[in-house]
Length: 363
Image (cartoon, rainbow, N blue to C red; front, side, top):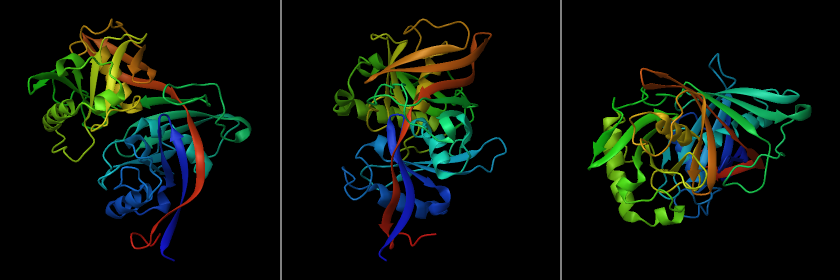
């Protein structure tokens, strides 16, 4: 045989899509694993024409699942962001949208048993150590994808997946404010460097010549903005203790503006070298926390609640996303406790994806 077959599920999780593998079915060694994922997705071509990717960063994401080695969790979720064009894989971040499909995929794979009615699955995000509780609908002990829940950025409706994110403050860098400051200045632009579910660099849209209400297409066409953003992001990454981030998708970048379409605050999120078509689940928690924290770059852009929990409705290019943030205020300081969101997922296909045997001969 000239190709190696690997069992997989193709799933939409939230507003992202990609293959979900059993961790036992792919290489243990990360260098070998990266080559397998590059081949499977078809990285190296803008359309991913020789793989199952979709030619966009939100459709070249990969989940790998296994029974957890952690006493708290049921499932270990290992994430990989495969690039669209440059044949690279980043194992540093996690992805909350793809995480939306993890519990259902684990049930489909038989890694955890389904209960009748609803099934709770405790998930450990291996990349960051975050703990997430997912509640999925399992009438008659079988995962259902049919329901009446709609999320902006996905057509139609589906069954709800309730996600509760625990202990996500400082999950990547070890600190809620990795630089120790509520605000820092890089290249003359004030930013807030924050780590809640995803380490981020957050600025006011107006400070970068944006309104904060641009479409994804308008943002992606603004090359001058991306050049300026990247210079700031790399300096901030160093200040956050993350080292040289030139080849890493973290820290991510976001901008804030006053809401105009019924939300709490307007947001735009970057992946980081293109604009997200909607909003990342992990990034939404960081942006919502920044909005709620006195002294950040969000000051003056919203009316803040004085106590938690609070629902923050983020405006993004295709609609709204609600984030329920539980927090305490002590002596004027924000202390993050947890965040909750409702997403949906759907199994799109299952079978075997093939990679050349020259890349990997199989387990």
